[in-house]
Length: 110
Length: 142
Image (cartoon, rainbow over all chains, first blue to last red; front, side, top):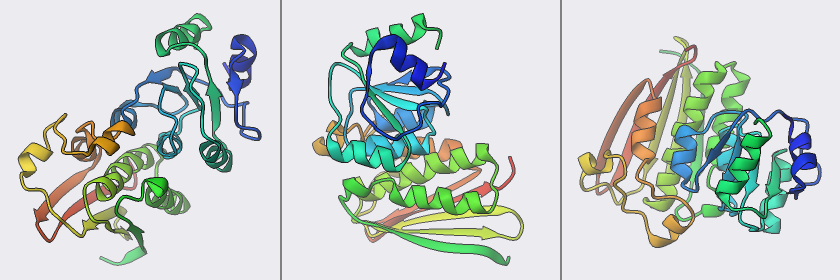
């Protein structure tokens, strides 16, 4: 599934403007501890987290995630969105808790 | 051994806003010399963890990157102290001395050094109050 298809089928909000939504999502990883994410995340996954600060971008780019989904209705600050756009990384906001966000991805066959 | 590439990157203490910048530069530098993507990912993990350690635990430092003719990538992370009093504990997964601020940002899981060791082909660490040095080696081809 592509990021675009995920956005269409969930109604979740992509907050980055020009980042590439045609990228494939192959699985997902859920954690808020950056070292766990660095150590265990895999390329092309969607990363589901409640961390919204600037360091999320570096981790997501270095780990080559497809996109970052911020759960629980939290919001990315402007400077984080801007850094993500520079890195061509899609940021998405979900109103659902982490578990429900992950369940939605599973239901959609991610 | 002749060096085909040599660079250094500076990392500042408590500079959370730019955390990961040195690692990103290392990654883009190595992409230019055609490093295997799987090796690249391991290097990215190690570089990021070591860079973060310099920011949250040390008083900043310098990262030295060398690629030698024999297809080896050498990374040295040399910080300005204060050193790690108990290296054995520091290498134990889950053990951390990170500040409250660092933990709130999702750092300080106690997985940094274990992650670095796991993904590196060779790993050496030395520490004294004058500073900690981590020597890492990766083969360009997996």
